[in-house]
Length: 293
Image 1 (cartoon, one colour):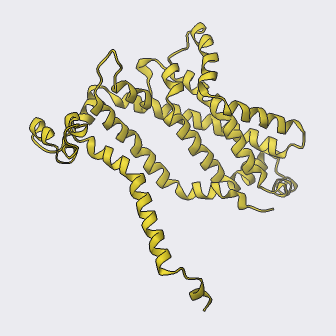
Image 2 (image 1 turned 30 degrees about the horizontal axis):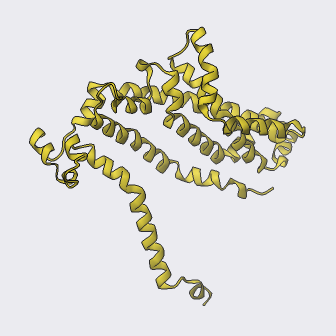
Image 3 (image 1 turned 45 degrees about the horizontal axis):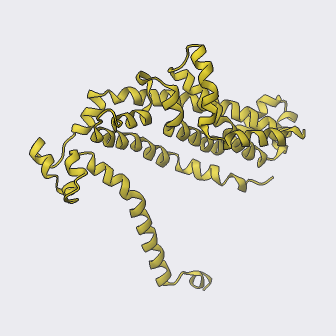
């Protein structure tokens, strides 16, 4: 009887399903529209006279003999070697995530177990730096990079992105560590573990979802960054987002929009699979506040 009483009315369930379906369609439509358009020519996909040309592809068929073409992908990946920008992106992301998590877990754990008053001020200063626009920090780095002749290289971008990302990583991991009872540390040390062994073998396994969640956000910061990488990296060492912008051209140079459209799809697909693969860990990490002592 209780279960029947708790059942939602049919009208409410229908309304929920309709709203969820509409939300999913609205959220997914831009990507699928871009995916569809990446196999068209520019005159079809960006047709002003008739938007249905993007669906039927008459100019695509006239030019390439069919309603679809991979010319955008071939131009981006082969002709303009977009794979180099992709490789640079994953190199930057790997080292940014690795360094940020290493420093963040050690620093967050130390601050969460410290009883000193300066912890609050350190976290407050970190939050202030995180709130600052990245361009204000980059402007301070550039003179040093030019003087030391290290501008334009991937390690330079990694250093800047770690510096920008570290306050957020420290805050997030500190909050996760604060939810883990200190009794776990003390019990492990009573059993003969050192402080670092307790941290490595007892604390980290407990808060592993929080580490994955923080790592994913760090990855997205480096993966989607434009401002820092566009200013710090040279043309030969671009990551994906600045390279996509370069495909669009400028007022002085003509770009190829369809190369950019194909590159956007190529850059979005890995994010989709990454989130799908780690969805359980992300949910567990975001709900880690439910851990009680």
